[in-house]
Image (tube, rainbow, N blue to C red; front, top):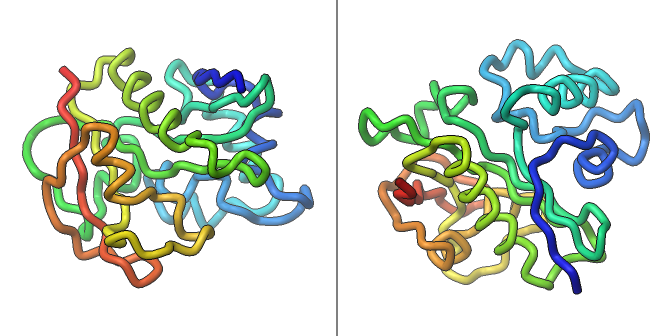
Length: 191
């Protein structure tokens, strides 16, 4: 098994991981938290969501990273400065201090590639990507599921254990709940 983590710049590879099976379907494309206004998020439907992702991939700092499993795009992690996401104004996820953290809010592994540790590669890769772009602090907002099974459709935020294994510590509780589990703010200093 050859694993490689790279910045997400290839639209076809991102589409293989995040895109819909039908081109006209409206799926998240990992934009729900990346866009700073709910108005823009609601206005994008069907192929327009994919086109917005294509635009983000052209920016100096792409919106995330991909993991490749034997050359095939197998997973995605969204990572960007919190100030460029809806977490900047999110009242359920607290702001802890004046630091300008980067947020990791989505970790997704394609079917056929799961249960091989790729989420660990994605999380480590997201931390490295943030560090390479000047981040001093990285945050994530996973569920605190205490080892209970998390439905795959809601597992995209990660688990507290996954983040702890990557060197994050619990920094705060949140008032956000996903799939019946509380979300916690996990933080790692990478300066």
